[in-house]
Image (cartoon, rainbow, N blue to C red; front, side):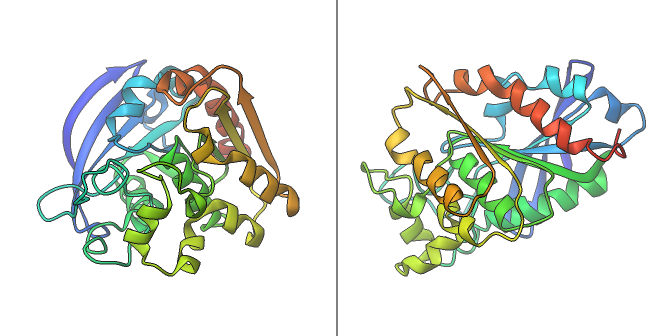
Length: 288
């Protein structure tokens, strides 16, 4: 891990690191916020935050205003980049922002030219946690959340790794990407076809609506969604709510009246999510 920047924040520190990733076969950048408790000689649990399309590790850390509450609660924040980057990493030949750089969808690509680098599921679920837990004052007690494409990522990473996370939440997640075909970008079907191939049955492994019927862990899901989100038709939260109801999986959807898809929405409700995760992270009384 190479430290590339450090800033003091609410008694803790915000850092950006780079490292050579074996999962994505390139140099990856990620951000971490360490609260004061982590700087005082102890180890703290972590919330992993996955950001949305076109974002990097910087968007959440600069815009969400999460550090104040994370400092109070004694929680580290880990924010990876949203895709591999660098020389040789595939980009969308059509120039769409919904595929390629900044649009890794947190899955493991199987198709050329994407599969050499776009192994974001393995990176987020396994490589990055192993790295930070070995080299930083962070325990193996984890929660996960995210926004938009990152909300989709949080859902599928937690669903496909039972027992790995204490809690799960998402802001305006893409809930049913294998069914999303609205608009030129689609936020689903076109990207999944490129990354995973034409066999749509393989897409279901990275679709929360398809996964929820087969879960062995009943980890509660907390969702916040703005009612004035212009992407609402592509996000399809109602499909996930219905799928959860069919199998009686615990899910809470807070429909926030008048809020849109922007980080103003995330910043407005991030404190409630952090406190929700803190209850789970410290539930055993063994990590604080």
